[in-house]
Image (cartoon, rainbow, N blue to C red; front, side, top):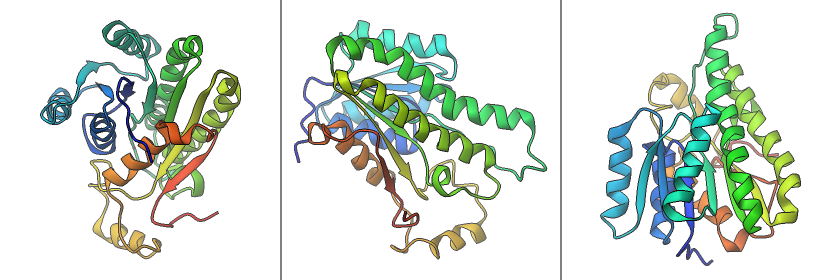
Length: 250
């Protein structure tokens, strides 16, 4: 498989840590010029950029709360101004506020939908026009197995990630004629800051539902994203690729 991204430009939202950092580093290793986006974690973003540059690859960082349309537009415009191009958009920014619905506040519902789903809309809306003009683009949106199978205590998160899937399928139909592909990667349980606070008992329970018998690694999610962002996946659009050790089999 050809993972040569020399000359390509990518944005990875929420790439100051975890899965986003792994995606940014893996794309950069293939020659992509990567814009590392972060909302608050400046130090984490610096670490991502430093890790990329230390290996002789190219990266810069840009602060933007992409759940706000104007800031998502600023991110796209920064990328176009700096690199003159945008080939790949990975919408990875996300958050959780887990709680049973009887105790879930309206604020926590709204926050998760805004960060996880609206940010995907915002960045895609801002990126589509330049991609349309050049008749090329790769968009990979990060969902979750919770958006496919649901998960108790995650009505907000599951709704947002399910929304990402429906959004991506519709966008794939809108953009296919301009050679822009839109796909989804749905990770299972991956050790990140979003899963660190889960009770140990729950962590053990999840293992019993994973046929491969282990949690995944951020780098394994990154490899799936890189595949969908590459030339080898040019005939794939509107699809959901589960990276979950077999946890969700449809």
